[in-house]
Length: 450
Image (tube, rainbow, N blue to C red):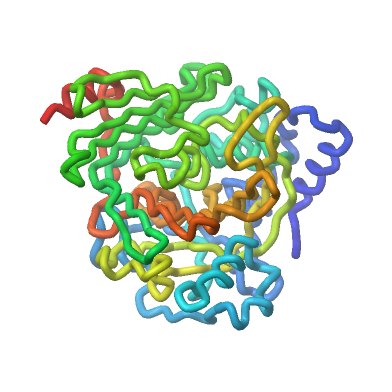
């Protein structure tokens, strides 16, 4: 498969410096963002056989038809799958399947398969984000041994990446709207085939890194603000949480939780990493949302390379289905899911010296066009595949961007799953920016009292 020259150059340099953090690329290298690369750093050309088309700008205009808020229900009406991948024919496509995908095909041969559709490279961003990405390419750098960044703002920080740490920061600082609001459902699939509603409510996300008028000098370092309010089930109604994620390596996340029974807000320092996620009844870890969320300090990040893989993509239509229609006995409904062939960056995360995590090894597959995590495999202390994560990206022309909120986490050993921030029966809306006081503990207390 064709790979762009800056990628090879960066890898060669990486081998020479043996573990040192890479700085910004040269102006000459950055010029590829105006030619052979997309403005966000993907290979603009398609693949050799045309199954991955060239990028021609993504989707930036409104799509006619019904919507879930600002999410078009069906960007490609009338399209049919090209192939169906099952346990029986998986070997034929093994080089384009993650280990986790192959494991699910083997574990659930009657429930899980891939409906593979034509590939559409829908990712895009506003022109000002493209401009900032070009600026970042020559100015953004890793600091604090890769645990923070400097000189970045309002775009992909490392559009021509040279190591795994740069790629995980590309994911953490991926293109988003300034502010969004969406309903959500967290569902738990139990080992007996039943499912449980762990929570339903309203969630707000705001991205100060993508405030249009900002810059690297004035940005205080917080890149994601989140606040949710639970409305169901009744015993959780009023439960709320606020988180702030930032680039300060010594204090990367702040969190406040509203306790319904005590009617007070408390700091929640354990909301992160491998703490069981109480929002989803403890069925997954906090840092598994969106494939990965939070500070990358517990791992060493190794860039393996780039490859073509089948991944969930452009799954808008799946989210328009009724909740009862998207679940089967053991998995989400494979007949409703859309998979496509895309190029992804493969990054392997292993425990950093002196660190601990319940999932000591992870492998991430990150879409080259949107910088979203598509798939992630997690391994236990014995090196056995344990956890399989799929994200379900949607194209939102109003931003424009391909973004991820819904996340599916399979526990292969317990034979359970968590479906987080599901949009089925909900809406997703790009909203005007809220005052940052909305994302505070005091605001949570006043908004959560029943």
